[in-house]
Length: 153
Image 1 (cartoon, rainbow, N blue to C red):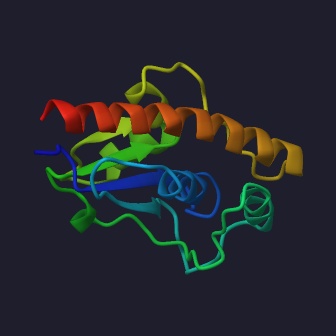
Image 2 (image 1 turned 30 degrees about the vertical axis):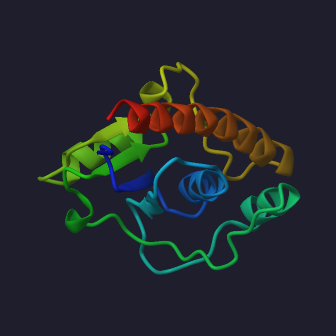
């Protein structure tokens, strides 16, 4: 039996790193179905991804054109949902602002990495590309980990 049915990536606004992670994860092969989504901690209104994120995703034959930012909700937490924050500040805010926060981890720590996923907001297209490359590497490790867990259950 698999450990999680759902995976939510969390960033500040759900317009950059979290949806990028969602898009990358959805392009990967998993041994079992996993609902993959993203959420933001400060979402004042629904908005699309940052245009530079979309440009980088398109370069990798992926698209987030249908993505609309959504805020993290108390109802997103349960024992079958894995919440992966893209940085320590967002992880801390999840624990501070959500009473029933559970299964909340830092993406890099979850895959035994010390690399920090820096927010490219305001940076060049190359900065967004570097963020994608790091995220792709971490998510590839995540896929291996989740597939191994599936085989062990």
